[in-house]
Image (cartoon, rainbow, N blue to C red):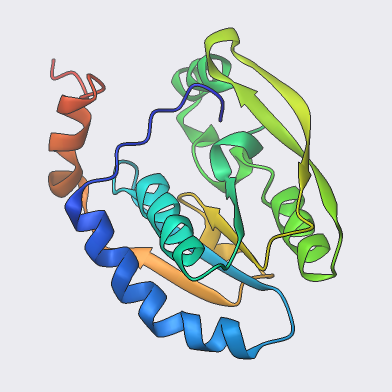
Length: 180
């Protein structure tokens, strides 16, 4: 998502090192491309962990791309928030184009040199199309709340943090839920 700020902290670095140490030998031995999902609660550090994993892989000359679930929402951020407030039943997997994300991962695994994907422009509250070059990538990392549900994933990672764990993140990010 264009306009997203990612701040990688020490605990993200510790997680990425542990994860990469486990999967790097498998990736390096394989002639095929590899996919990873990073899932967890909102505010758990999915984007930061995915970025940290990508950076750690790069140190071993393993190139990767990151697909952010936020780009695959049906509606752009402010419009999606309005829909959620209008109908709480909208919250869930139906608000995300998981089928398209899965198709993009399938194309990546199939060796496509580029994929067409949505891109959210946060400040403009709109979604545009983006062509993402994948020709140099060996790994695709799909990050988002629901990415563990995707079919075209080689390794699934779940960040086990709950609402209480993530509340400090929201407060720091000025997105804390308002108490009434």
